[in-house]
Length: 470
Ligand SMILES: *Cc1c(COP(=O)(O)O)cnc(C)c1O
Image (cartoon, protein in one colour):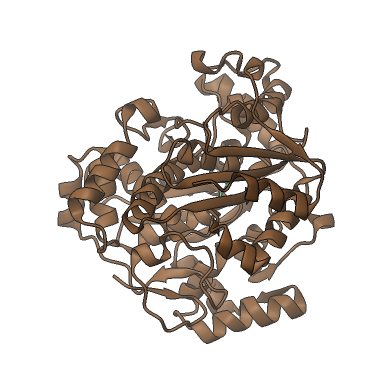
């Protein structure tokens, strides 16, 4: 399997060559040259597999530069009941007839990003070890991504993490989750500023190419191909759990921000998984809902990006969206470049015509939007009718799934976080705080390992230099 860029860079690359990369050199995103097809016979054979075996089967269709026994071991070591809370790893639970929630959030940081990030940690350690190289991962976080990255990389040989977060602005639980890590290779830097200050610093440091090369600075952001690939697996697992024959089609409702999660669903569908519809759910930041309703993709400015009670979906642009548009345009790289490079820079967005909008439906896409009031009502109603508590992001998915579901359509809603991470909104919805798993009781009281710094690029660089000791 070779990988290409959505903007046409002609260099064919293998999996391990893009594993540690973010953007392609031409500013595009990496995609496989084709989507391997999985036929009904193979799907039926996969019914008896455990999650790690299923992951191995799917990954081996895309990775041909890691010896298969090694790939098998990496999957086995990653997807364990110990790490993900159950043997099923991503069990379904039924709500009303024909509607399920797929639990993707029982990993170490209680959000679905662990599903991919835990595998990424194993792959990074493996590949860096093989090359005899090291990597300093630099990132900015306002919550889920940073903690998932830190829990994936803690104790990994050859990797250090430098994670910037806005000082005092994350929830006490999220701060405790990150800052209580005592691993020597994990460095929390609390910046006296807001999330945008953190992001600006990351951009400035990564933009200093000499510094970047000298200190081997890398990232683990949501456009990383390996992360997307790892997410394809749970679509297969969800479908296999919900069906008994390959005649059956299932829809997925996906709480969406950067379009990484639902893009993995698109890839699963392109591989031949019998997915009916991909229901994109946004919050008040409805960049994606606007596109799928009108064909207009409009990047928002900071002033138009709302802080909501499903904060991990608060995006101004959807960084993985270019991958889908590339497929939508029949893989026309020149046209993709024109839209994402020229038109977005010039007009802040672009529109596709009515034919393309029809093609979106043929790819299974529909969308809807959920607001704070919807979120609260959904959390309350789901608790009252089914005795099950969902987090605010999952509630957005549920709300839109219920709105758009057709008679007889069967829908799996992806659970992207556990309610305990967003206790304030749960209290607002049902009048009491969510129960905490035993292991998380009192984490706010644990000792913290965190450096507070002013929003100053040079200070952050000096901090990294002093610790670049691997
Ligand atoms: C990251 C995240 C999302 C959005 O996923 P995308 O892949 O960015 O679309 C939704 N919910 C939660 C809890 C998240 O952490």
